[in-house]
Amino acid sequence: MSKVHYHFDHVGSYLRPQALKEAREKFANGEISQEELLKVQDELVKELVHHEVENGLQVVSDGEFGGTLISYRT
Image 1: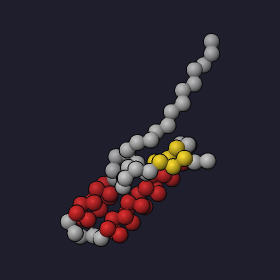
Image 2: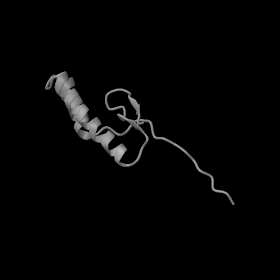
Image 3: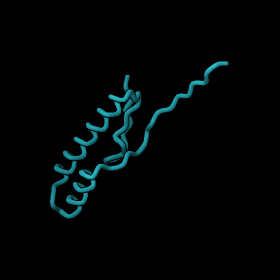
Image 4: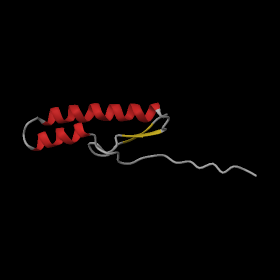
């Protein structure tokens, strides 16, 4: 009996971390600048991508934390 191999990649939204939700709310209320919001967002995306790579994903995503980005590792 032969084995069936399935191939799939995750490319979609992740749940937004609480820190990102709070930063977006502060930005909407004028409590932080867009630059400060992007700094928080960028750091969280770096953590997410590191986690994806660490777990062997060949396609990584920013989780749609700030928009959409798909990057193919080579």
